[in-house]
Length: 170
Ligand SMILES: O=P(O)(O)OP(=O)(O)OP(=O)(O)OC[C@H]1O[C@@H](n2cnc3c(O)ncnc32)[C@H](O)[C@@H]1O
Ligand SMILES: [Mg+2]
Image 1 (cartoon, protein in one colour):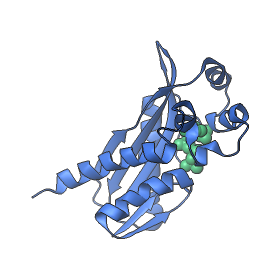
Image 2: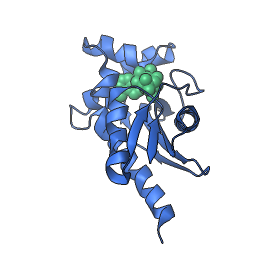
Image 3: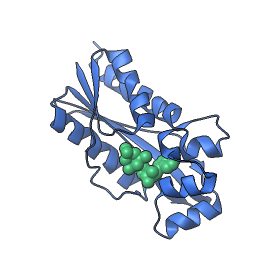
Image 4: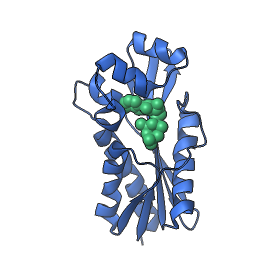
């Protein structure tokens, strides 16, 4: 079985390794367009991004399964929260979707996003570190390291793999 993930981001690829561990086969990673803005601003847009990445990864590689993981933000009455969505699509055209953990962004970070900036560079500036999005992520920083971005996406992967398995049960 060939499984393709639509990104080269190491935090996402690390999480996607769970698919080959659980289902067997090999993992391919390819950079594909998400078809949504660089900084998705709603659940719907972030879900679309995840699905597009999964479908594009499948198309690009001819794999059996395609995976897309996408990060975004959502406005709530309690502030701006990060949101995360994953999609798994099969060659036969089935698709599964699952969501990940949410955590509120500090007001000063949220203001930068409302100003049109992307979370990735804003987080690097805020933490004075480089490429936070490829390691612990905003979720790791603001949860004091308890839930890192790869672990958060691993949880999404468990939900995707589980739904796929459930659909195949005898
Ligand atoms: O290479 P890709 O797969 O695009 O990985 P990415 O880190 O850019 O991830 P997304 O496109 O899914 O995320 C959309 C935007 O939100 C940023 N982002 C999302 N989650 C983040 C996190 O946990 N920490 C830092 N930046 C994050 C990210 O850098 C983008 O600007
Ligand atoms: Mg991106």
